[in-house]
Image (tube, rainbow, N blue to C red; front, top):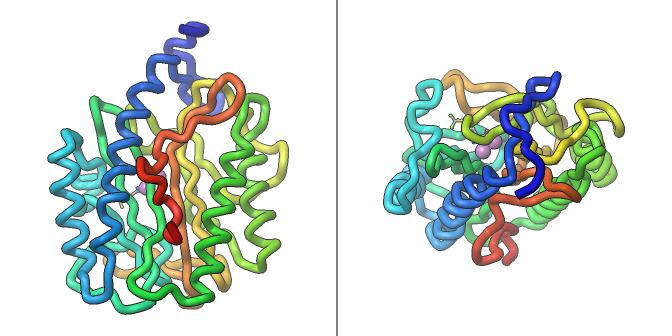
Length: 269
Ligand code: MF3
Ligand code: CO
Ligand code: CO
């Protein structure tokens, strides 16, 4: 066991967790990631997003966890499923997937009080070329952001790594939604921005837990929320993609809590 950091909160309101707390996040993260692995064969043309959500809801319970999203601010589903130009918070329903649709599925579970939050992209049928590029750049931008996580770097370094990579590919980073601290709560400080200036923002410290979850658009970055008060879409109707991991800052870098158990995080497995 390393240093005792019990109870510490930084001046930015970011909780510092203990070495022993990493085990809680590992369990929760593994359950969320396993469920996304299990969903893969269901994502096919003709399938409804509601049926995928029903499967997720059942697996959450069967694996001894609880859904963090059911009942969260009135949300009624075990996942968010965001198809094509939906940026995030898509509500599962009766709509059937079509060949070439790309979708993000986002699952958050609670295991022994710890939150595991992850999302990734899936494809129904044949992946269109434009969508393939978007998915690749979005995935790689998350990984670049994660590579910037180590004590002494700042949250701005994460945002800068993501933004500079995405914009070098002439795509845009969504500004209206961000990552977040988590742990024994779903959403905690800080807001983890997916854009920014190197060296800006709070300094990363060992024991911080948070998500990184960049949303990337093929067109402009602006979004709007539909009348259902959840579904966020691109204003210009361009395609959007997102990947999300829950991570912890270690003594010399980062631990990813939501790695895919069968190494199927990226949809071109
Ligand atoms: N899992 C989402 C996130 O990454 C939050 C979903 S909240 C919900 O933070 F209510 F829409 F499910
Ligand atoms: Co999240
Ligand atoms: Co999420």
